Image (tube, rainbow over all chains, first blue to last red; front, side):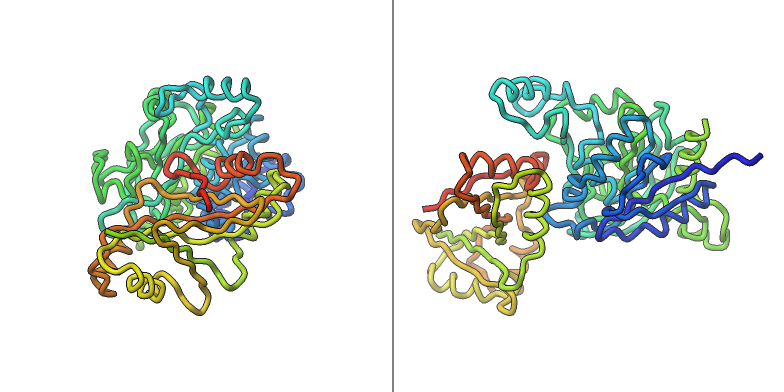
Length: 286
Length: 159
């Protein structure tokens, strides 16, 4: 008897443009993938996981990812993530997950610039009868701000290296190489936060999964190693439970070796990015 | 040293404002009846105000006459606000407008230009049942129009 393949929903918002290659990358890792439109999101609970691909959801109106983040479909994905389903946000999908508060997803005790914690702010807000945006139903503790890059302002597309930083158990990094080449393509990819203690907390919790690094793995906060000025060179963050990952680089564009610069002759051999999808598969099977 | 504020709107339908209004309603904030959006600039410069205002409103990197309309506020002038309307100015905190400043100074001859501020100027028009439009507008700004980790939102006081 053959085991049924795990099924991933590839979420398609108006303006998403990486759904097909994401679907192919998921399938190449031995899972089923189905492209699900934002306005036809019935039966989402029947999927084992969700991928929010890259693109410009809602044409980046207001700012990248924010309108999709408020979509009822994302609220449902949030619910499924709380039940343990896996969620991967790539590039614009990463921006959506951060704007939806799914990533980093652990802000209760983070301090803001005035020395208040989110919990204190929420308590004060409850007393006043007002709801803060960092209240438990919508904590936004980070942003993907416009790139800071000495060469070009706005959209920037290149190959970079990322290093796996965390040993924390999660759905995405099983068997992945410590350092991998991977492409980026974004204008707003700079992880930032105003919450003073958040980055230290993420480091301590092992939630920073990927950092931008040099070819030999040195994590230096300078261009071109850090291509967008992200705080602490952050390229990807997982939630505390390890079942949600938001990453700016594109693993689906490094899923075959012929996609990787200098390796075109290796053709259909698996590329480094595929390991992330294989890790998702193995996590779901386990 | 002089300053002017320039508000650049669209003559054609503003799809961003339309989508944003839909998103506001999706959030259950149905008190907003209409939403408009303009790009906001504040120019700091030396020299004659009238001459600068006329030239900058013709600079096609700022105003494309085929699709944009613009209005200028000189120092001491105030915007006319519609009843029940609240304007929110959203700015990226680190935006120094270096590229635009360089283009205007070096390519388009605005040598007298000293600095630029830029933002998005939202005007939310509330229905007559709104109890506290300014507070509701700031709630919407917090929830949707800006992300405090790299942006700031302020209520723009009109005259």
